[in-house]
Length: 500
Image (cartoon, rainbow, N blue to C red; front, side, top):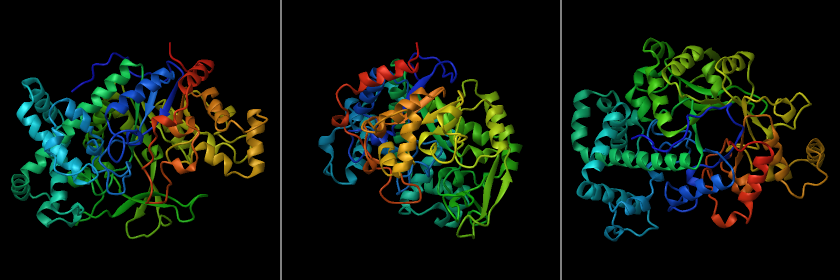
């Protein structure tokens, strides 16, 4: 399944560009959240009408119950919750009159997807059936394990794989064969849903390309412990005989946290990955490139050195830095993929070694304007310190909206920001900061959708360190003021961010 949209491979330094950060769950339409349906196409049309040539998303994988796209059940799979039911109806594979649940009930979507599989089995033509067969064959390296994983997890009422019966936890071949037969229907349902997700996403990516829009994705450097990736490739992670992580990822104490951050992700068995030519990473990147034109590496500094915390520790305080083979890994990836375009998330305290690794491979870093107005004139996030090989943001998915951030600042700091920008008034906030991002020398400027809609803090996407109320924000078309696309066109042309 490959795209057909006519567009060149992304070249970061070829043109100055502007992008919008919006996860598909934040789109209008859909049931409980946005999906890959008609509103995704309308959003692409809005981007094109605004002169915007990049759509940045968060990771697209299937989430755990907390909804975080940064802790997924798979580093390869797409989130079935993003599947558009309207698309299935358009294909005549879903007849909603056969669904017994009400649209407001949790079972409704599950019943629709099951009905769609039945409809596909009965009505798909030979070309569609062949596309399904080819998809399953091409993605077999991760697809079979993922589908078995989610089927077993569902069978055991959502339990993590370390709590499964020992033969399944240890992947005893006889036990896997037996349960594969018993759960054949659930496995096939999961496989079909991945086929549908990728089919829908490829069509969206093609549509974006036809409108001159590139897709900018996001890849967490670490994967969730309770994931198909760790269960199926336990040898690539530092685990004990019970499958529990012996050491975990995080970051040390800093200005923002006295105890650091204890993420809990298992750490990689880098020596084995090196021995096997980084095949695990090559496979992972291959999937990312089927989804995205550009990939942001979240916590890029972990490729140079990572903070290793004993799993028995309750905080991140008693960890230590361990060197990672980032140079060898990146060299392998760039030798394997000629069209690889990565962006390094290099926020926080970054060492000279991390910066050197990024620059050795010409990876753009990130500049956040909400971080720019603390300290003195040497603050690297201030626009006069930006470099072309970077992506400038007003804020990210982890930040407050720019309007809310600004209004919550002390009056003296607000005055400092206005003086820096040469503004006499903040009546038009956050637009002066948006203009500052677009004016930066950074090759790419990315604006959260909340900022161009001038929304307050109630519309924030995520608040790090909290587990409730995140990842739920959605916009409505009625929130887009008349003339916004034209206003963006003017600004993007003014600051040279409209590719020829």
